[in-house]
Image 1: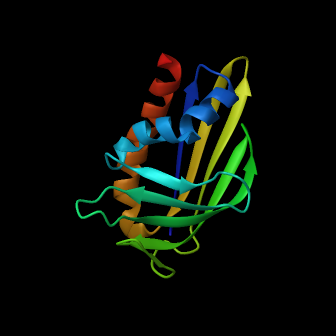
Image 2: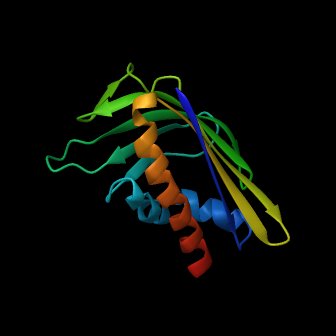
Length: 146
């Protein structure tokens, strides 16, 4: 596994950054940095199961299956990956199983620093580095323009 970290300062409250990042409508906008049409199913509360899904031409979706390990609204959320989703089927094995991803929101004087920490399989690291570099800037732009 490789650990990747990203951060950006956003001129907005932690609540606004949290909502823009995690509300479904705006989530679907910034995750275009990964794949246009990306979405999720599930919730962001502790113990929730969440499915991160990409688009498909045949109607069968693929992505990642996770569990929210910790959730403190407007402060911190942590995801543990349980497996992959392949053609609408949960596959509870593979390189992502057991990896983690977390988002921290730290606000000072109206500026929120968003920290993203990922643990990814080494073979995904180069792609994730590029996509997250774009995604975190898109989150900043979405928050600051609305």
